[in-house]
Length: 172
Image (cartoon, rainbow, N blue to C red; front, side, top):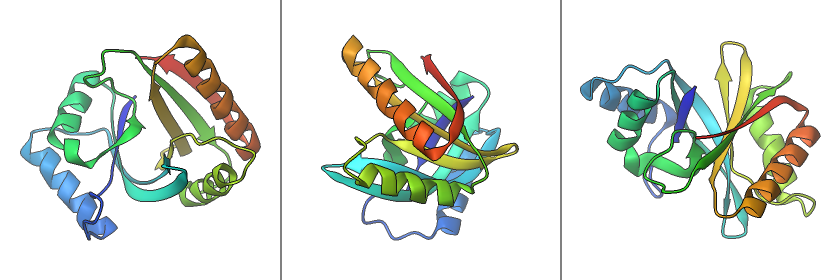
């Protein structure tokens, strides 16, 4: 599954419902039909702070329509909150995980508290409802081999603490 997380621009005043309608309308105008369009919450590190951002996850089974959707909605993408390789010259490392027995909003709240604590280093994680429950994903562009190993270690630590299972890493 190729996935992008979209949120209103900083300072843009838009309700969740209006933003969902805007994204859906933009995709229809571009002739793009997603497999999934779902409310989501992203936990995003930002200059020493950890933000919780409400938005939308748009998912596709194929890479090309996801790339097209990312291009059409580029101003609303959040850094490291997509699993389709865009214009990065370096590989995109992604993870997916299943969240057990929690709604996506509860999972985001727990993740936010964990990352704000001194025990965990920040990682971008997006939570959304899927037909089989709540899913989580995140990504990072590869800089150096040890950076990816450190990132994977952070992800595994947070996932273990949150009781997220089936953590799958992949490179795109």
